[in-house]
Image 1 (cartoon, rainbow, N blue to C red):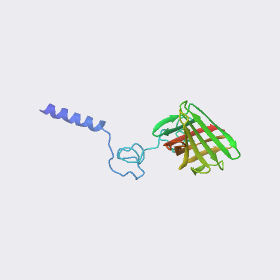
Image 2: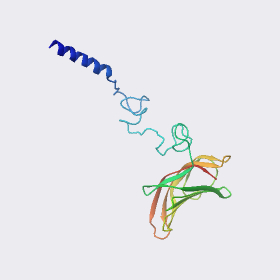
Image 3: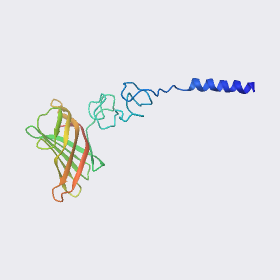
Image 4: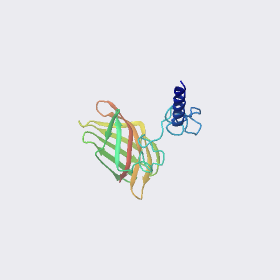
Length: 193
């Protein structure tokens, strides 16, 4: 019996010394990583997602969307989601198409996305309309043009290096059938013009 008590005591000490103290106190707005959060006040039990290098947002110390800083280096890319399906260009370019006008174009061999922008070459957000419009062409040649739903945000409009980075979204309607497609989560990084 005495031997069983000693073994139970040793086991209790081992479990106590090997266990990690978990702080379940705190809130999701206290500025402290506690209560099982993945980072300070985000993830785990908190509703806010933690910033990452794959969240589609320019945050942390990123120099463009999900790249640069502590994330992987930035490379030229043009991506989006078309009606919820990932779309990634296999070939892309950007160029000046007139005074104060830049155009980005990308294709994935089955569809094309073109962004038209006329306005100041500066950082900022512009709603869809006269300065920003988008176009989607599918494999059958159907043309979907943007309306006033959507926007483009320039995080970097470098007129010295002649490169541009940012995000976009727009709702596009087929000019013949009237069918609409949502182009969302668009990202353009380090496109040179």
